[in-house]
Image (tube, rainbow, N blue to C red):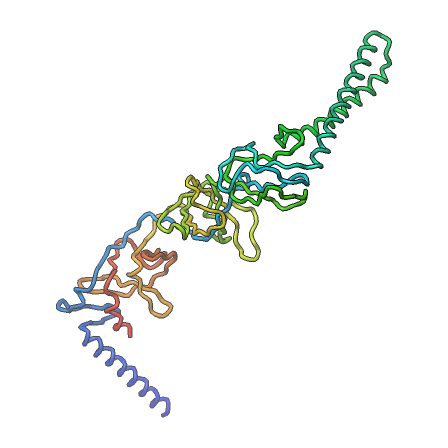
Amino acid sequence: MKRIHLSIIIALTMTSCKEKKFEKTEENNLIIKENIITIPQNSPILKQIQLKKVEKKEYYNTITSVGTIEAIPGNYAEIASPFSGRIIKSFVKLGQRVSAGSPLFEMLSSDYLSVQKEYSQALNESQLAEKKYKRQQDLVKHGVGVQKELEETETEFRNTKNSLSTISSALRVYNSKNKRTLVISSPINGTVMSSKIVNGQYLREDAEPVMIITELSKVWISGEVKEKDIRFIKIGDEVSVKVNTYPDQQIIGKVYHINDWVDESTKSIKVLIECDNPDRKLKPGMFSSITYSTDSEEAIIIPTKALMQNGNQQYIWIKTGKNQFKKQNVITKEFSDTEVKIISGLQSGDIMMTVGGIYLLDSLK
């Protein structure tokens, strides 16, 4: 008896709910029958509705990440003194363009003078060893020399020649016309980005760099891409870059390098983007946003405003007849501010409601 009584209560409750829903629908001039909503011809709702035919179109998947602008290592030079000594003259100033081999500063160094003396000594030893070797060659040629002595002088000559070559190579790096002073030159073309040079300053051999030179006509942008997305990116792909400093300027770069390992803490892979920077607007340390465009595909793309939400379910209103609409559940993937990709629930040729779906919300209650 209790079960029958409970069934009656449930039935009455359900009937009451249906009547309430029907009454609410009637007030809005909406008619519901078998999950189809019909809007009467004289309803003002019709004037608020906009429709569009569902069509497939070419779609480019996009992957976004953030990055930091860096100087290209080969275009970046930290200048430090190779010897302890005192600066006696500076040839450049901050912001100045320099060429490879251009003098930067001159210094007086006792250590450098010692190397000069070593060079003179090595030169004399090499010249003397060469004379001994040639003399032994001449003696052997005329039958009065000893082969063993010839071999010994040849070995001595080669050793002294190698020592001289090593010291000469070291000195050749320092383009110093005045043998008493050391001139430090720029190893690259670029701009003096930092300078701590003070005339009279004493530098130790192990001192920190006193000048930085960079060539920023090209820069790298270091970004990270999630492990799951790296399969869409390859070297040579064009990417779009934007920096906060120039929000209206779109910069095009190319993927230069993709790391071969995954960062375990972020599950991301480092990607380097190379960008032309003719105006030197991009500065090392600036933050940027990077957009990677992957291969295109045919996909159903709809306006974001057409997508409706009911709890965890997303749906679209589909036209099924004259002034008739049905709620169609869909599964989406990539979103943007204006468009969304549909991977299930819609087909080409469907007529969807892009504007006005909010007026049908009452029919779902």
